[in-house]
Image (cartoon, rainbow, N blue to C red; front, side):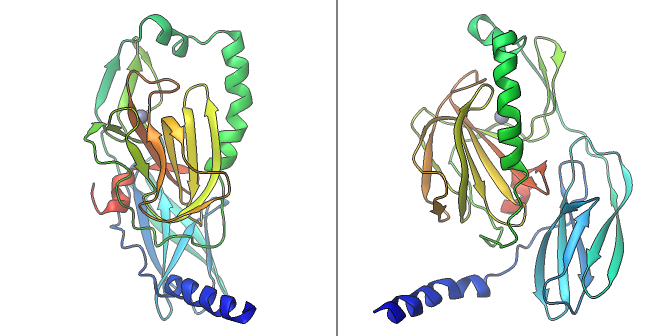
Length: 275
Ligand SMILES: [Zn+2]
């Protein structure tokens, strides 16, 4: 009986070996993904941007690719990554400019606390920061998905990735995700297989879920109404993980969806074959 279970487990895991690799367009812009091809005869070469480990995928024979998420606020120009196999290679790429749109938002009444948080709120924000940062910077060596994403919800995009935001005239960090419109209670689906690495309720993000897809590819679901999964749970692409809501700093019900590669928020559309 035990060995039968083992065999079926192996059969279940087998497709993971046959997964097609993530076919990502080389988009070396701010908030984009640089795709760098390299050759290595090593069975498990590793790549780093500065000291941060990168997502590496096998294409065929000795052909590999490293994916680099480029920060929205990165300096333009020549950058390099280090590849470690049987030898160490340095490979260059160039970060190109991209101009994202601007948006001006006026927050009133109870939402004003999000523009100028009081001391209690600041204390809470400080306590939450390392928890969220730990989730964002998780690096599991094993790939848990093939990196090809589907939409988490069906609604229209109300705020694009990279939008430069101003709250009551004060410049804030650019928008590091996609906002999808949707009514409270609309199911949110996992865009790819992964593991639930964080569930919680935070000052700005409200009810939040973080999903680990492996090799530093992380996705986050923010302002939820409800969590429908548990910490540590493995989920499949398309599985319902929560519901759209308006918890945290949110002017109405919507899903804020962020995707991180090497600790960097990138445009989630790039993982769905769009710009
Ligand atoms: Zn958002």
